[in-house]
Image 1 (cartoon, rainbow, N blue to C red):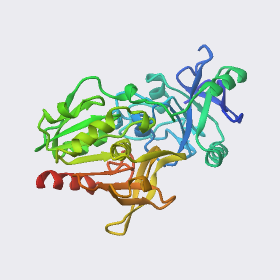
Image 2: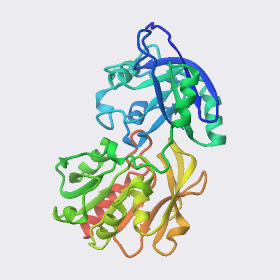
Image 3: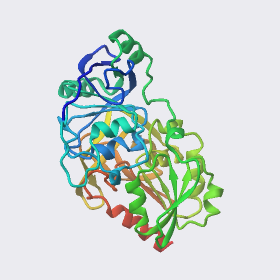
Image 4: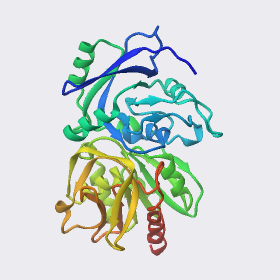
Length: 366
């Protein structure tokens, strides 16, 4: 496959400049100059680029793939984690010229064009990753516009801290997914399809908007409540912690993943903080403190729960072995538990899918 090369630049807020070529939307030579801006992060997964791009938790971010060769197996509609790409853009070292997989129905470049998402290839992603690792995730801008325009755009970008991005990703209307034995009400803060499919193995899932009240949830007579993943700063999701706090008092089992874990901590009066460059990958080691076993996990979060702020209200159940940050907890005095990582692992290893079984056990006991 041959394509015209259109020069592009990536500019970080610290002034770093990277040269590359435009891919995806607006990469044609006849397209008007384009600028994509957001918080630049890096992901260390070796595969699963389509699931990562369509994960709503990446709203507001530009994803750098550290794996140098991206797009070699194309894309498949069956692998989408949502109906669109919420990420602001994609950065790669080398975009595959050909796709080769029996499941593939499109190339990554065409996939980006279809979703009107711009990207930049030819970037020295090792250098870029070192900058982000040493300085932390930072705002940036890339595109075919002039360097001065890109510098201005990068300077204006605010990143994800202090921002509520849930309105961009949550459903506006309730809907039902699956037809399992239990009835689970799932808050959509940016829920992934793989999570819905895992829940649907044992439950009829009533997916509700992020702003749904505790009274509205209980009117559905749920066997369990699920708090989904999602983007942005958890402390900006106003109203959700109070709703979760009300649900704790009902005795209905509550299970949270990623942002759901953070919101559960806030409901208990805890605190969250932003990590320097976040955890984005499919190979993060986590210790289960109950069994003392190590699970290899899929992760995608910029914020973290301050475990010390929950000393008397929750028991830490999982710890990240890379930086000793909190990865899971059990709420004391309530039928609730949560993890920071992604046990559904779309993409990633399935070491932690037993947590869905724990959710079932709690609903059966209830």
